[in-house]
Length: 439
Image 1 (cartoon, rainbow, N blue to C red):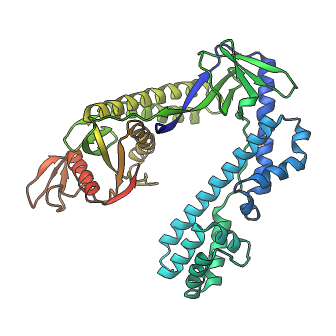
Image 2 (image 1 turned 60 degrees about the vertical axis):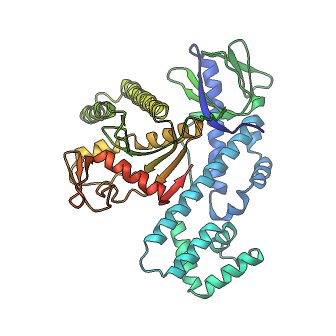
Image 3 (image 1 turned 120 degrees about the vertical axis):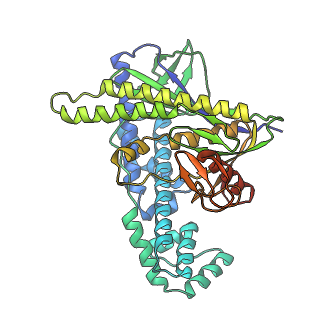
């Protein structure tokens, strides 16, 4: 039986600066791929092309007949990957549009439950969604057709259809890219050798050689990101990594996440205690640099040093986060990790300094890396609803008080650190089945 694997991205870099002529050739390919993507965005990003997005071969055949590849003189190994990359972007945009409309439907207090049910049915069933947007009769398989007719009979169908079309016009955005920062390559477009990589160009049977910093070789689709100012490249390679299984990982751990201390467990153990220092230094530096740049924008428009230092600070922060997450898993040895869904930062507010700091909080990166590392180690990650979880007593469930980082329950007298009490509540809700997501 094959072992379970997960996909990770590894990076390769050029060992020395590329000749200007070679960099120009790579930029030409990236620019042509950009034009192909914009052509696909414009032609197939609207409502009329919904039926062509899956599986996408109709678009591929139409693009072949369009003559665009011949006009650009772009090799097919780049042309078709650019088409499918653009189609993937369009599909993601439609998913975002549907998610936004679903959120608006849920918040609309003027709709009845039957009307909300009907709109959610349309958003979930692709053929029905497409038919309503194109103002065509809805034709579905027999069982689904009966469900559709039953739902539409209980509401004002025309009114709901018009609402859906209106929201799509407001929410859906046709994409466009102005940057030619890189391009994808299939296996036929490159080969490794002599501690480097040979990349196909627009000239037949001519490849450019790029020396690399490592000897690793891969056989799969890759992506090359260009850095013309440094005459350098970055190669992104997706690789499959085997999942590890640990017989001694048996505990169930509830965690509470924070800005100053990254993780606190239900046993009171803390990980990432210096995260607040790293993040505060990063936030203050970004804030000061932005203020200085605004004052001297006309005399000093360059941002090269700023971007370089910001990248170093971000990498230092991410390195610390990953180190502490690894230490957390190796020390706690969990079989299941329970965590609360983190709230989104609120816009505005009474304290701009706090809001600015929270907006720079690496909450999304921590969540993503924790999920990835749990999958690598065969640890189940369970997300629970976090509403009111920090002011609830983990012993009796009564509402308590938080004072200077400590929680006190006025009913049962329970007293502990605020983060520990929150982690205990997270674990309690997860074990009771009040879960939102499992991985």
